Length: 235
Image (cartoon, rainbow, N blue to C red; front, side):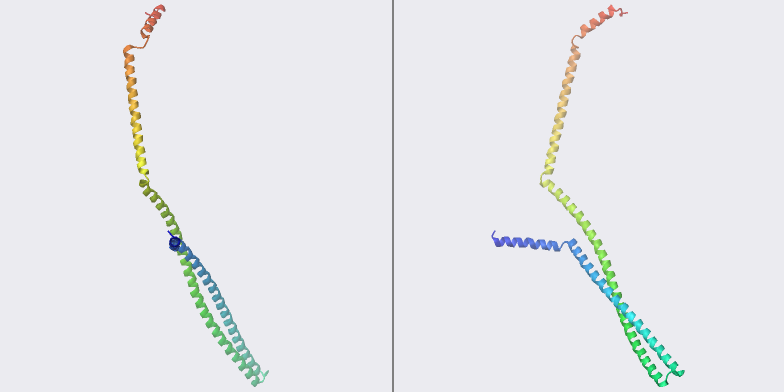
């Protein structure tokens, strides 16, 4: 095999490893979770910014409404002072007109700010819904990841056990056990045979001893009878 063929084989192995890694469901799920958490962080940041903008718009609208009310109050006060003779009527009308113009201007600003507030609040609601969806999806994927890890552990153990069982016969383990069983059976039979032979030998010896009696047994009986006679116990 030349160097080019070797490099080609190495490239194939690395490509297959890369494909296997990409197809790993646990790694894919973990990467997906990381991406979702990043999306959630971005959505939360955007939500906070939009809510802050809506709050500023509401504050501006309230401020403009307060100014419009204040200018209206000032116009009334100017007309009242002119009516009491405290201020020339023409001057009072001019200033009251300016105050009412300021009132209208602030009301316009208040309307614009209120519209912006409504728009920002709508965007905030949409972003909040997005955040909730991301939370639910992350929770679902976390449960899926736990399930995948548990299934992987079980399948790995099962594969290992099944592989060992499948290799038992091919590796000769089963045949070896059968030969061991046969050898043990032969040894047990041989031991039993020797036991029977030993028992038979003992039985023959017992029959012979019974036939001829124990050595000196007759003499011992005679001595026993003489001793009894001497002691006067033969009554």
